Length: 343
Ligand code: NDP
Image (tube, rainbow, N blue to C red):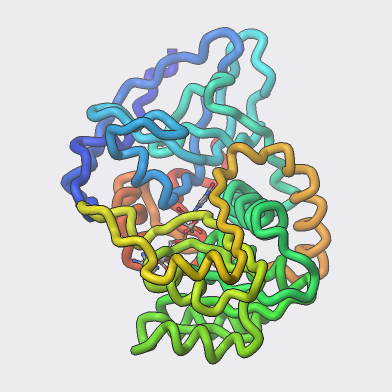
């Protein structure tokens, strides 16, 4: 017996409105041995994502809610330190799996483990541009947004994990791209590094609708919706006929305690013949091979860049999560949970 202890973050209470550190609790638990078919993983990186806010509510959804007094879950990258009999993975393998928010995880098939190759890219990029958020960008832009080469694209939360990939995929296909983000630093990066055409700092704009209109003299073909509220209303105002809105998320509303009003201009969907479609990335994992082929080309050509915001230590994971709703993260929000090499 190894007698290992693992620190992990539990949900202490369900947040009402904006979550606070008091909704989370650090616990120390004994780590069980892996059973047949399972592996014991020492986590190195874990992801914090906006969708986790939804799982903190007790409601029926596409994934079950987190349970009070239990560890949270989410994407993580770690290294196998011990393997049970008949396990598919061996000691030293790097795995992307769903048992984040803890230092050690006993991983079976339910945690959806996938081997990652550290020679291909830094392993944490499989939690960001090369992983779930990147696939979300790809599916949302091409499949849901039905984007065609050379169209005009508006992206909200544009410097984030999903948004930055959307921007650069569209640019690589000849689009005119405008992104919105919450600081001048993020906007500068979008124009200088991600090479989009214009960036709008929505926190500084007195009239977001006018700023979006000025940035799109010919209108918007595809709006990639990450935020909701005033962004959605501005986009609807400036969509072209037969435009498409890919509804990926509406982070502005995740902490609301009362329902947000619908866009006041929703009626314009009719004369403009707009198509508005939401999606969940986990229903599109069959696009993974095409996504990897596309990203491989762009990364090799230096045409896909991303930023990471790293918070150190499992004890600080709640802080990293809370920062998502304040724009503290610039790019993919990650927590460094342990050393790069576990064995
Ligand atoms: P990001 O890396 O973009 O981080 C969240 C960002 O949202 C913040 O940095 C902040 O950036 C912005 N933001 C936070 N609160 C507000 C607000 N009130 N108004 C405007 N902007 C705000 O996160 P992701 O890239 O991981 O996720 C982006 C969106 O995609 C989210 O809505 C998420 O829920 C959704 N998503 C959906 C998936 C699906 O399957 N449908 C899968 C993955 C993500 P800024 O400084 O620019 O304000």
